[in-house]
View (spheres, rainbow, N blue to C red):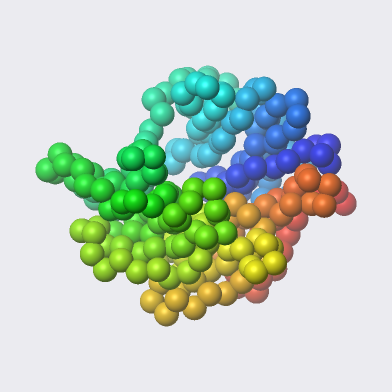
Length: 262
């Protein structure tokens, strides 16, 4: 088991939903870890850095890592699940695509603000969906009819972030909740996100995009749907400034700690 002072970050499901990938951060640097979805000691890849690393799965079950060094452009590479065959790749700016990949969402700096753009691959044109606010983390609904993103006036005031829905043509913009890290459920009936209450406590929550009804699920951050849509993975901070990774089964809200010391 990893040392308790390790700060886990950005837990992510494997495509087959059997494994959870996370980075572990400490004063000495960052490591990449793979946990079974049932918990237990992680497998530590032979991949370490004194800089910040963010890891996620590719669709074919490999691992994509972005290394962020102060004062330098991010570098991205792909490795096999056993840590072998490291290959550097271009840093992809595409955040989301619609079902037929004819429309792509990306973020770019405009006037000092992170701005969400939609690119039409058929016409070869791009258009800004946001302006004059800090906007990020856009994603298409699975049917491609709607886009959700987060926005705020001050990039440093996460407590003022809003979840916004908009159609791909830029119409019917509306706020559905306050929060960050939005992602669509299978069937697009719910959006998973992180919200802050009046006391500053962070909550994993879901909101209906049609009724705007918000349901709190658990305290935590970095939520992600499982590929089947039946579970979520998220992170909970400890009082000692380390963290643990949890999963929740949505049908009965059964919670399992993946990293807790037994």
